[in-house]
Structure formats: C-alpha cells, structure tokens
Length: 228
Length: 253
Image (cartoon, rainbow over all chains, first blue to last red; front, side, top):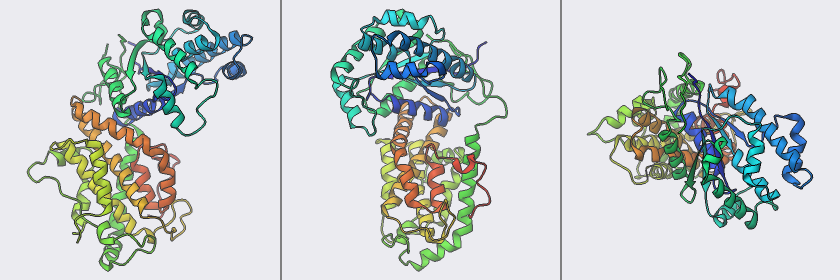
C-alpha cells in the first residue's frame, strides 16, 4: 500500500492564472481538507552545483549553454523530487507551478529542439511523474494582455512577446494532444482559462474529485480510504 | 487514470490551524465580555469617536438581521461550524438602530451577495448571510472602543486616527473569512451540491484578491483587537502569526 497525497502540476502561458489556481488549490486543501500543501516551482535550485547553469541557461540561452542547461534542470528536478516531492507526499499534496511541459516548450522555442528529444533527455534522469498536469489554456493575446496588466516585474522582454508566446502555446498543444508519448507529465487535463478564476478553480477541483485525488470530505476524519 | 491511496490523518493529530482558530474565537468572546460595559457606555453617549469622527456609533452597534424564524437548519450549520457565538452575541447585544442600515451592513451585504451569486433560501446561504451581517457588528464593536485600545505592535495606547473606509474593507475581509468557515462546514456535511462548491470557490478567489491589501489594512486599523479580528479571520499568510511564534497570551486584551 502506497499511501500518499497527489503531486499536481499547473502549467500555462504567463497570464493564464497559474498563480491564482495554485493559491486556490492551496487554500482548498488547507481550508477544506485540513492538509497544508507544499508548493514548489519548476526549478528550486536544490542541485547547488547546477545553479549557475540554470541562471545562465534561462536568461542567456544560446547554443553553447543549451546542453548544460538541460542537464542542470534535469538535476534540479531530480533533487526536487528526491528532497521535496517524494518525502512530502506521505504528509501533504505537492503543487508545482510549472514542471516538465514548460521545459519542453522552452527548449522548443529557444533552441528549436524537438519536444521528443528534450523529453528523452529529461526522462533519463526523472522517474516520477506527477499525478496530474493541469494546463490552463487561453488565447495568446488574452494571456499577454493579462500578464502585462499585473503588477511587478514578471514580464520578460525576451519571452513575453507575441511570437514567442504563440510558439509556446503551439508546443503545449502538440504535447497535450499526445499524452501517451509523455508519461512523465502524468494525466494531462486542459482547463479553459477564459472563465472567471473561481470557475477555473471549481473545474480543477472537479478534476481532482473525478480522479479521487482529494479525500471524500464526509468520510475524511478517520481511517482513510482507498482510491483509484 | 491515476491510482493512489490518500493517507488517513494520524489519530490525534488535528491540524494546528484548527486549534489556533479555536483560540482566536475564544479571544474574541473574552474581549467582548471584557469590554462590553465600556462599549455600552460609548454607544449610549453617542458622541463622535475621537479616532474616526465621521462614523455613526449607533450604526456601528446595530444588531444584524436575524435568521429566518421558520427554519433552524442555518443555525444548526452555524453551530456545527463552531460559529454559534459569532452569530448569537451580536443578536444578544446589538442595538436597534434609528436608520435601517449603515455602511458596515452594506459592506457585509455586498460580501454575502458576491459569494452567493443569487443563491438563497437554503441553510448554507442563510448562514453565509448571517455570518456576514455579524461581521459588520463585530467590526463595529471593536471600532467603537478602538480609541481605548493599544497599537498591535508597540502596545502603546491611543493608536492614531484612521479612515472610516478601512472599516468597510475590514467587514468585507471578515465576512469572506467567516463565510468560508460556513461553506467548509456545509461541504463536510455533503460535498455533492455544486452550488456550495461554486460559492466556496468564489470565496477562495475573493480571498486571494484581498490578500495583497491586508498588510495595508492592518497598518491602517493599527489597534490590537481590530487587527486580531481581521488577521485571524482572513485566509492569508499572516493569519496565525499571533500564535505561530509562541505568543498570543499575556498581551493587553
């Protein structure tokens, strides 16, 4: 028996509402199910010797650092799985704001690398898939408009431009329509992010309920249940 | 499809947040009874408050609307959520206002309407309306005696003046937080009603939208009892810092 909570990934273009959904799922788990989730990011800088390569590869991507970057994020994800996700899942859900899908898109857009090749390289280092990858889907114009309207410095000049974001979305499309080719994404569910954010949260909650990834509220208190 | 077994909660390990919420509820009850005579005096005098002269004290003290008399299911839900005190004490001690409604009651009503989105005539919707109305009274209670309180950080007396508008924001924040507790209790009874789940998601989203404003609101309210009321009711990162550091007792009450 492998008692554990789910590992949930939220993906989507900038401005599609990933942060809001992550916070919503956090509050849902904490407030309603009485379990405080752990939230992580796609890179968490846990493979210390790879940190510089992650920074360089992400913000100054070029042909010279592309292999090192791919290797670095694989090492970082492996460390995140080993040190955070796997140990914590016995006690709480883990919610990642971006994970594998974003990396596939980054290498496709910035380096022209086939998603199958990127996936293959990452898959040699990673053995654990999330239980669920939620992909927030929104037209590029709308997501960019939302991203530009928010406060802070989250918009990047070399990334949050229409051409790049359109290609990222195309990559998402190509991957999520062939989930069997990318088992390390887990179950992939696309959510219509045009809706109000409370409705997106409700839809995500429904997905978790349908897949028995949340406990039954009425039978929650004692004993636990088998799901699956 | 994923197959996994969700772990049972270990016996005897309820979430710590539940215990902190219980402590915070008890603190509210303590403070009400501790300061009831002082509050009654302020209300009876009817003078302008020194720290918020524009506020009408009689409206701050106004008793919220009662629950429907012909149906006690909403009251049972409130009791089940541990919120009987929250609804009952304003009913017991609130005063009849000369005017039908004040701005705090309007803020409470707006909060309830935004969560309910037109749903009514059910135990959970009546309970959400009730705790929201009570939020206006509790905020009004501590606002009326704020000038006699202390700053929440320095514990120095006479926290400075503030804007009346902050009270409306406080009511909205508190009403949303209490509504979430009602909806959680309703969902623990049955999570099959999509209307309840949708209302809960609306409350969650509203809480997320409010969170960035909370530090500024806390700064504006400044006074310990009002700050505790808001900060332990809202779902935000600062909710139980009062207790998380090992403090929470022995302060000025």
